[in-house]
Length: 495
Image (cartoon, rainbow, N blue to C red):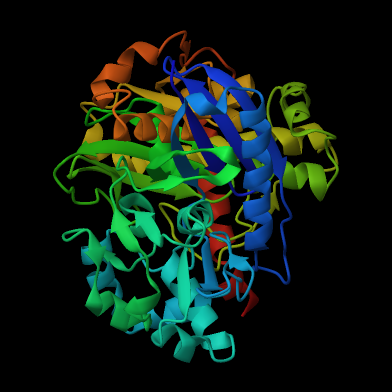
């Protein structure tokens, strides 16, 4: 029986999982890596450390199975994080700039003020924001001595993390990215599926440093890393991979992944849609057999990272999983509202200047109320995004598939179902980014003929329905919107 190795390179850790043809996990390994915060708003990763973490995980997982049975490798990754390196040596010129990094906020403001957003929106489906890769790449070229001249001379290469991993897996021979990752750079025209000269000029990016854009389930090259001898045949950004892994194959199928952030995607079919609201994105979901499926996306920057902050910076809990019991120890938040805008606000606001806010504190406020407010904040952010999406999908949006580590939190899921007035479907396997990468790779090498053949693998789903949880949703929404307005206006108030 064949198997597939899925590499899942995330924001805080790397994972490797080996799946059999029934999508059962045969072996897995995970390793965290260092997060660098050089200054407020700056977030960096060591690209070499990322590769080493992937290599360690892959070897550990493969040691537990028959590596000769691995038919393909699939890759999924944190998307907008960008790496710049020397082609000759493979040495990164700087730490990777992470999708959470906000150092380019002023440059994005200037470009928006110059009237560039309509053209970028029309071609890429994105908004102008530091979240996306183009402004980060431009910063690297402008701030590293000699980098721009070397880039124009073809001495440098760049890419999102999928590109960096494929460079390593191919021994420096292949410089590739798939359509889903390429679309997150703000340099790709969705109409052509390739880099766009007008966008490259707008962001001052030389074409010579960019990778070739491929499909999401193509045989790309043979890797001999980790003792393998098989093709890399499936690549997708983490949220598109999760959409695929959760088998959201039909228009209107929706999912939310509760990871470091929360990412809501709805399958929009093969016709490129018009965004139903100004704060929502159009993104390729995958390209298989030359046919592209699109999705509408809303990105929330602080999901599980909100709980991590309570754990690491405030010491409210020892382990992230403890937040549920603490929050459940009180009937409500006691009027406390938490807006976790630590790196600005994503969809549907796209306000890079917003900052975190904790409001409604009294002498009776305890850590349990703050914990409860944090879970409500995660669910309220997702609710804002779904509210913006619903006009386009109202007749088809019957449920929401959920995954990611924070989806294990039953209280959070009950709050979410109640706020959305929507049934949540939670599979037993909550790491569906890796499942999606494995499925795409398996389709790429013919283990499965098409997405529809995977439906039998969706089983044992837990359905979380809007229940009698004591929650005054109207009052909570009113307090939330008022607090968000304050978080968005903090710089103006300071002036």
